Structure formats: structure tokens, C-alpha cells
Image (tube, rainbow, N blue to C red; front, side):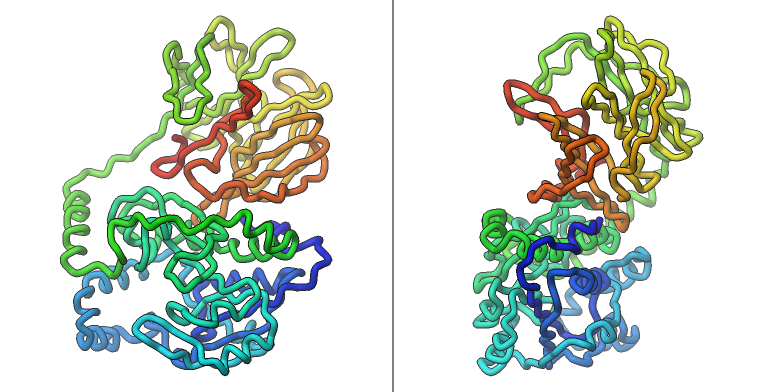
Length: 515
């Protein structure tokens, strides 16, 4: 999902001076990528590494031998209470994705060139405070931002040691989940949403302004490792996005876009590792259902529906009036989806995806609509890869189409040379993995709503680009990304104007694709 737009700033402002708070040079895969983003940018530089003296050289738990981990567990009552969870996590991580965001990466070589200091924090229970001498040394580097990738809960003067504070990830929706383990309790509570937050730390836990928040689809099942893919990789660009925004537009603009921490509404005051009893109550029924249920392959079958008249419901929250719709049957071994209507020379045409189950590939078909009946479909556009979502728009007397071509890793523009079935490739608009591009033309300004996909887990962000011509140079709107919420960041059809307002249909993909 990382665009060059993240890595290059056109502002003449001085480079941002960044500090990292680290336990050691062994970082999770997704955090190592955050560091790489900073190193690759032209507007931010690593100025200082602050290492935790109590953790330097400590061996990560995942690197200890199994007997050593068992012995450590037996000596600790808290760990014994969560024995089954530790066993579950050990098994789960053995089957983690090759793109595991929590896999440990040795970053010693890439961090070696930068200035560093070590700090022994003053510890009380779960809190770390920095000695005055350490605060003085950190402030001498005149940092703009400190990123917390180590230490524990921070309190005291370290929170103001950088001009714009200490930024920290919380891989859960802090409105509902405080504590941990991250991305687990959503599975336990069957919550369809798993969140991730980038937040400025304050003296009060989880009370600082939220710089960026993402809501991702929970990957239902029993695997926490699989459920980390979307929120961890989907949030991996939050830091470079916000640093870019800070450098280009300033702190005042960032503050205007930040949201205050919401009132906590979680079911528990603080989430901790589940007890052995909780694991039995959760896993027992799941394992039993899996043992007795016969696995049957699920085949999704999409259908189109048409009605000639009816009142469009375009009010937020209003129930849709679906009376009068008639389903359109597709041929055997095919399904129809993603309809776009267009009027041409006084006749109404429907363009849609025609997907062949056997080939597992779609093409763009079209047919005339007469009196609520669909005429004989013809092929409008076909490629060696899957096409869908044929977004149509007119500009300066020409008819254009931007079909979804994520299977090709591009967003492409086609121009109609003979309606309805001859289209020529005009330009590759974006060399990105993207879906459901939706175009709106207003006063010769062309707006492109594009849902970008992160390939390691397929999390989504909605971006807005604009150009002065269909094939013109794209520029990103300063408000991009418009949404990192899986409930609304994927398009669901043509943008509508009703009563002077614009409505962008969207899908809620939190529970299931295409809702």
C-alpha cells in the first residue's frame, strides 16, 4: 500500500528529526518496515536511538528453548495461570504466515550508523520513568518526534522530550480493548472488527490524541497470528503518513485531523492473557463443532436485480426500499455482479462483471435494458486476467471506463471507440494493487476514489486523487487516506447526486465481502 506519495515531501521545511525508543535491535517485522520507511524518505531522518539498558542483549522469548520456556513458566504463578494460552500461542505461531508481522528481524546493521544512548528507566510496577540526566541528553538532540518501539508504559518528562511528543502504536481499537494480547480478544468475543491506533502518549493511559486509526476485518477462527496480518501490516504506513503530513502541512493541520481519545467502552477494565479456564471455554466448543461438522465448500453466487421505477433511499440510516426489484438470471456456471447503468443515445445500457466459475476469471459484459428486461449480453472488454467493477464516466464528449484490474496490479483507463463493445487502452493510471475505483467528474475536475490493498493480509485504505483530464497526472488529495475503516472504504457503485448532495455507495466488508 506504500505509495511514493508517502516518501517524498514537496515542502521546503527542514527535515524532521526522529528518535526511536527501543529495547534492543531485534524488532518485529512490521516495525522494521516503519524504520525502513523513514530511512527511504526525503523529509525525515533518524537522529537518535534510545536503548533500554534493562533489555539490551536480552534474548527474545521466542528464541528460548522449549525446556527453558517451560521452566520459566512453572516458576511464575501468573504464567501458570495462562499456561494453555501460552501453549496455544506457541502452536499458533508455528503455523504463522510467511509474512508474519511479529517475526523478529535483526536491525543492528541498519541502525548502526545513528547516534545512540542507553537509559535505565526508573521502574514502578508497569511504568517506566526516565532520569533527569537522560531527559537532558535526549532534549539536546532537538527531536521533533519520538517513536515508542520499546520500554513499557511511559510517564514523566520523556513524554515532552520531543517537540511533537511520543507516538506509539496500539494494535487494537483502544475504544474497546485496553491491555492485551493484541488481536486476540476480538476472536474470543467474536468481534468482526480488529483495530490499530497511532496515538500521542500522555500521562493518562490511552488518553492522548489519536493521529490515525484503522479498523480491519477480523479473520474469524482461532488463529491470532492470522488475525494480526491486517491490523499490523495495514497500520505499518501510519507513521510515515503522519510524518509526511507533519512535514508538508504542519502540526496545526495534524491537530485538526486528530481525534480525541474516545471514552472507553470495553467489556473489561483491562484485558490480560486469558486464564486456562477461559481458553477451555473458548476453544472447547470450537474444536467440538469442527470435529462434528462436515466441511462443505461454499460457492458464492452473485446476482443482478433491476427495477424500472422506485424511490431511491439516499438518507444515511434509512432502510432501503427494495420493492419492485427483479432478479436477473445468469447462464449456468457464470455469475453477474458489479452493475453500472448508462444512457447512450436515448437507450439505457447495463455494464457488469460476467464471471466464469471454471476459468475463475471475469470479463466486462453489457446489455440493453428495455422495460425492466435485460437484452442479450455481449462482451465489452476482456483481458487475460480478471476484470470487474466497470466504472463508466463521460468527459468532454468521450466515454471512458475504469474496470477493476487488481489481478494485473494496476488501475487502467479505457476509452470507447464504438459503443458498446469496442474499447481501447488509454493509460495506466496507477501501478498499484487497488479495487473498485470510482470516478466523479465535476466542472472538468476528475476525482478518483481508489481503494488500495495491502497484499500481506489485504487490508484496505480509501484514497482520493484528482486530475484535470481523464488521463491527466494524478495528485493525491491532502485528506487522503479518507478512510481506513473496512466498513466503508470500498466502493459499491456509481456516485450519486440527490438534492444537491453527493452520495458514495460503499460496502461493509467487516463480516463478509460485498455487504
